Length: 205
Image 1 (tube, one colour):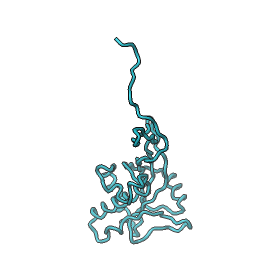
Image 2 (tube, rainbow, N blue to C red; image 1 turned 180 degrees about the vertical axis):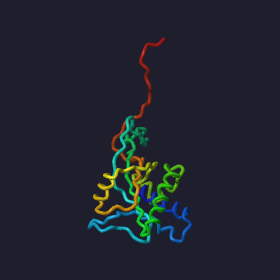
Image 3 (cartoon, rainbow, N blue to C red; image 1 turned 135 degrees about the horizontal axis):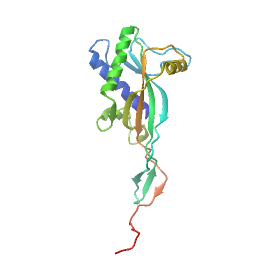
Image 4 (cartoon, rainbow, N blue to C red; image 1 turned 60 degrees about the horizontal axis):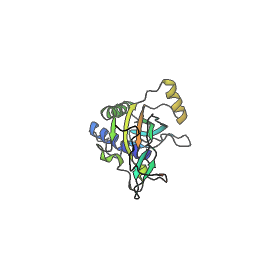
């Protein structure tokens, strides 16, 4: 599900940049990468052939009150009890690493412009949201229902800690908090009986 979301984001940001720049140096497949910006050995993992690299740098769960179980009908008129959908916050780093510093700044502005224009995605309005899932009927856990984005402002100290964690010097970049609602697990061994009759308590008039 995380891979599904980030592959969708990569393609959408790239399509936006290609359309916006109208430049021979911005062609589909050569603008945005989805990968770690630093290899395990500490080598910086960005290339001159692309402009922006997308990397996941953190995950936490969005906990809300009032989440309820979901019920799916079984063949014997009972129901399977499923846990509520999982809602996650993913912290996504967009690094503009063109060798020309001014071009890198323009690329970073394009990323910000994309999310200013497109802060929200759901599967009803964006059919391509789950396009990378090859077999959704057998692997529903790879599907997502909704994505929303908010610019996540880092202090200088937080930026320093982030790049120290990555083992690299600062490169022009921005972090977005991506809130993701996932399709819940569709299998369960917990069955509950159907409610066949409602009884009202209290004296009759």
